[in-house]
Image (cartoon, protein in one colour):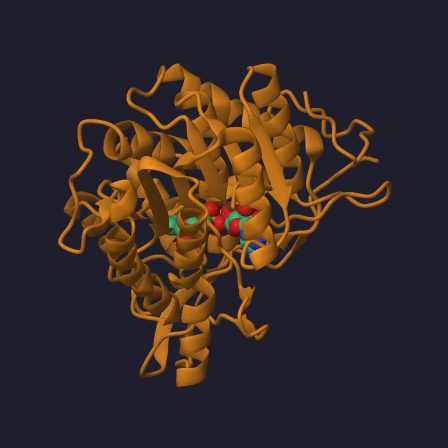
Length: 394
Ligand code: NAD
């Protein structure tokens, strides 16, 4: 089959196996170029390992730290006639590359919110690794079936309190426009916290701790976005922000409960990047296109893998280990949030419109990054070749 991108709104319904393999290889090369990471964990569990920040964390763990990794994700397998999801191919490629490098890597596919997956992971750790040193929590999902009640909760991306009039973009058409976002009600807000808040992270850590598979000095990190006042109405001060605020509560509670293993739990705030999850958030693609342009001009732009490499190398395990903000978080969004970057974006924000968006922003870069998530746009991949959708890790 000849696989081309088929974009529907903010998703692409096809993915290219060889392109996804090229993406994983490129990420591995980026990490290897920085050399080995000192004092690094050797047994790592990554939840949400198949794309975005989770995949980058797995690549840095494996190829920067030399760690054995277990990954968990929820992806769709391909058939003879239909491509699988990008994450499916990324996992295939990662496992093959890890095996070739002599690194232990096992990937489990299924619902991480459920008790069955938690037990499967515990059994696997006991059988193969004994214990783990690091858990990266990088799930991003619009729904969660609660393991205790069976209720299916759906998150919403809405502001809180009042209707917000915001500027946003249709990425496909390049149309910049203003629109009203109605606020969430209490039930929608509570559901969003149930899906994206800290409870599942706590369930994971508690289950692993109870099963005695956490090594002495174990640590866990969960990813967050705060951003700047330009996106606060729809993100940090909205339903997603409420859910993410709950991570701070969970981190603090977990630190208490991890004393038995001298453990640590931290929220790490990261920069805005193009992933499947972030593309679906209104305002963020316009903000990201502007911030990419500014950060590239100022020489401080990072790709997903570069950002996570810096997080591990400097903040989780390097010189800046132990430096936290007032809420106890690791701040890796520091480059995005400098006054120099934010003032430049704030200056562009009122001026950007449909006519000048290609010039004032890096919408082209945003679109390219979006296609790359699905394995399109990698040099060295023949996109006109007839390939099997079943996956060809190389
Ligand atoms: P992503 O969409 O690229 O990846 C999400 C991962 O979660 C995938 O591996 C997917 O398979 C997995 N997943 C989803 N539902 C699952 C389920 N039920 N069971 C098992 N696995 C499941 O997302 P991302 O943007 O990398 O987000 C990861 C984390 O990083 C989130 O906490 C997000 O808030 C945070 N973050 C993202 C950005 C950004 O700009 N993208 C910025 C800062 C922080």
